Image 1 (tube, helix red, strand yellow):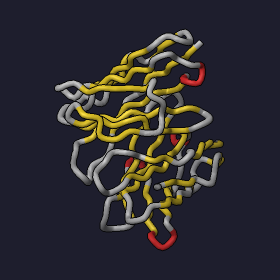
Image 2 (spheres, each protein chain N blue to C red; image 1 turned 90 degrees about the horizontal axis):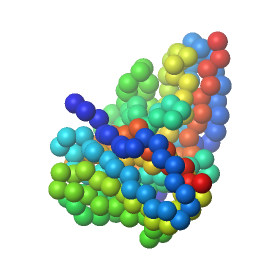
Image 3 (cartoon, rainbow over the protein chains, first blue to last red; image 1 turned 120 degrees about the vertical axis):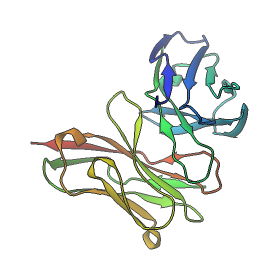
Image 4 (tube, rainbow over the protein chains, first blue to last red; image 1 turned 90 degrees about the vertical axis):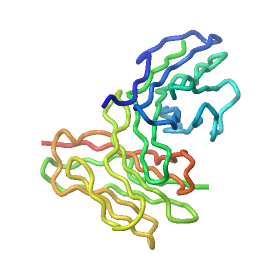
Length: 113
Length: 114
């Protein structure tokens, strides 16, 4: 069974631009979460989507947004990019029941110049 | 609020030696606990998980972890490490209410020497 797929793997953007990252969850998984990983802050939760609704949100500014489609695929968008947004963005999917674990994709490496 | 502490930033062990990576958590009830491993530039791979029941859990690649409620710990162990175990290891906690917010520790980087 295919794992979590994130596209693109690498991205270089200029400060002030916006970017959209994509995540395709494991088939049958309806919960999709996003995390930001940086050397300084570590792994931080951005938000979680389930059935096209944002169910949980981390402590990030409104420039960070996401959405989920009816096929459970998810996108996250960052507007007005700042240098500090350079990070590895990880997507995770999970079956939505209590005793289940999250499976992560390979991540998208975003570099803001 | 839940939190995770991994007190060791970097550990170096010889190939074939035993390994223990420490993890302490803070959470009001019994949490769900996880260990993930990350190779450079890669995503996170789940090593093992604890939801309930037997406090000693077995994972992939010969790893195990023990949940100790009295110490709020979930330490990861391996009896004999291999050079391929060199990576970064993250302990994580999630509430048992069903919402998907993993809180991660800062990670422990493992170096294996011949």
